[in-house]
Length: 252
Image (cartoon, rainbow, N blue to C red; front, side, top):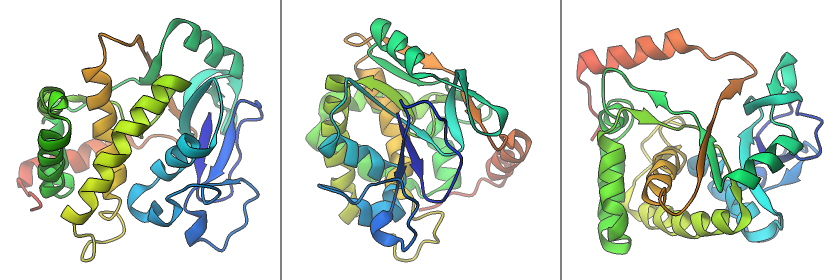
């Protein structure tokens, strides 16, 4: 289980967890974690790809029976000791889950007042979704129905978090990264602030849901609860979402 980290943090002691310094090629820090800049990598793209640079590194360089992603402050809940008194998945639990499932992702967040697409357009740049829609129509048309279904739904698994058997993970990564790479020349991040420049990371969240939905008949999928070791500001997020909805603001 990769733990995407861009700063020093307390990680689970279970040996199943591998802290990865994401964006190491852009950082002077020496955290002592596995670097996402080793071997074949896209570490320099971390500003826009976020935790996906750790996933790319694992796809190209890591050999394991199963591969997953968590964050230095977000984990799947389990029975192993985690940071700040939390309980996170143990290595044994991961093995048990993979014995009965091919994919595990986070329990979806419910967007009560809007769809996944309108939520993105209110909070980010809607043209990002238009670009992905166009890329899928050209390169992966079989996924367009799942893309549209996810966009019109009100539930989304977040944070690019998952646990997959190795062969499933390889199929997912081989599908995901060419789409994101194709989106780069269609998206101009130059005039966006640092928050909005996380474009490929945000799109990756949506595309994980698209890929899982499109392959649900082939793979066994399990939903897992997520714990934020720093606490989840649900009220603040809810208020901000309502503000965007009421204002009707959309980004081109």
